[in-house]
Length: 406
Image (cartoon, rainbow, N blue to C red):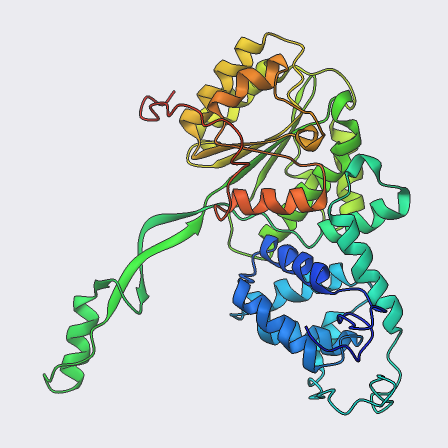
């Protein structure tokens, strides 16, 4: 973004306007977390597009992103949802119903303004401020947010989705390349009188793996429990808009509670009220090992955890025997495709996983990530989808034999 004549999201050479690059990068992160493949080249195209449109206009930024960042029809509703969350106050449905205005901002006035041929936009400065607030909020610890920032966070969390890593099924589907589809190829040849025809191909159909979320709601996790449950609610809502397997959600403290049904409410606040009524052990103690064993005995061993991506969101403070927790996490890993542990305290300066519970669990955890902020939860979503991994600085665990499943 090289133009220095325009205020708003663009970079101003005179130093009067903030750089839009962090906002664009944050928006791209949010899109990837929602399932839109916003690759670096598409983000670069988006940045280039912002150079030739009025970046202070919601409508033009919306269309610039929609035409450069989306690659398929499935991306469009996801893009609209993330744009509405990221730039609060924008109704993407109303924008999508309009024809995009093709306006190239090249005829700038001498004083660097874009002229008045665009009419009155709602409020360019408010639009810019909203994007900047969202970008700043991405990296703030959830426990340090004020009431207004929490409301902003809740709105942004609604745009997230949590598809599991893709797995290959036994079913086949038509594809541009892969195994030759002999029947379809022969039919094509017969249609052409026996002359050689274009080869038809097949490939295995792929589907996302099931995702199981186990959220610690004990006293030590109280500052994060609400945000993590809203993250789980966003995952449940995204399932209803796609063909993904329904994510299963449990809470644990001194009891294990299945809250998948409570989180199926369309409204996030209604879902939180339903969860509050269903969970009797808010802000209590923690019995991670014992309750993880209960989950495996009742649900995990019977199929829910088999081949799934299981995410444990907990600080790992265990009041029970840490050895039991280590054994149960090992048992879980032999059943699941991957075990991801998200610890909101991991991002704190000086943190080391030395507490008994987390130290016992980590040798059987595939990815150890933080979950303290919106950016951390976006990264967690990419880890669950299999397009990112946990912190590489973590020690690499020994590879156990998965074939000896429990």
